[in-house]
Length: 395
Image 1 (cartoon, rainbow, N blue to C red):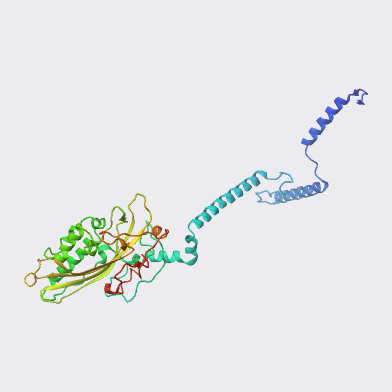
Image 2: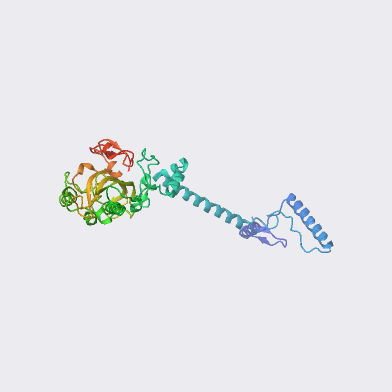
């Protein structure tokens, strides 16, 4: 049914529906009337603001205006932009923390020793060992093997990690020559010459990079007496045709360059040197040294580090050719002994040391056999050590 306005004019149902819809839209956009309680609180706060303003006006030196007491939202509405920004920042921080947590968990899964080392104090012990000064020179035979310590695996950055050799001196610096004195009819100068040439022979045969990579150790050979057939002569034969009966390893530490290479420039060294005489016109030099070689496989990009530990004892004689048949200024070999830890001794007679890597030892198949020997134990003489193939307790 149609409706009538004040003038009595009729309004159709369609027009009344459109009018109702318009009023509904305008009502939705219109501000809502606050409740009675809200109007009372707002009025009270406005009176308090007015009272403070009047009190401030009565102050002679008043310069500020009190802040309104309206709670947020009564007049200004909530600061939704700021709240939303805080929410976004919190969500971002939580996401970042979650990513860091996942990465840390993955690292612990791959390398659990990082967490275990820190919890057990191993990290601090390792740092202390790395920063410790070198041990003083060895002046007599030790009474025991070095302490076991932590069996850390070596790395490219720390090739002596987990080894007692970490506190040993480097290379030739560890070969200290004792003060010379006259002995056996040899002058102090002759004894000093014998000591200096013994050190030169040890360096040339155990530390020279060319010798270590399997090249001919000519500098070492030149220090030996060419008249001695079971000295220099035997070594010449061993280098030309290595065998179990003529092995260059008796004098020289060398690795097959097709298999491995020495990693870095440092070979850790420890030992001692002394001298005496058993007959007139001759001085004997006794040398007992251990050399620790970090090696990697020869293939490009190899990053697994192994260590081979070689102990060598030698007795060398320098004689006065007027009293003994010898070449002036040349060393003769009285005795030489050699033993190696972490060397595949089943390949004896090849003329090279053959280090074994942890990844090979963990592979299925027969492992090293023979008596277990600590290659770092310098408390025992070489004569006391097993003569057969042994297994190194550590490297």
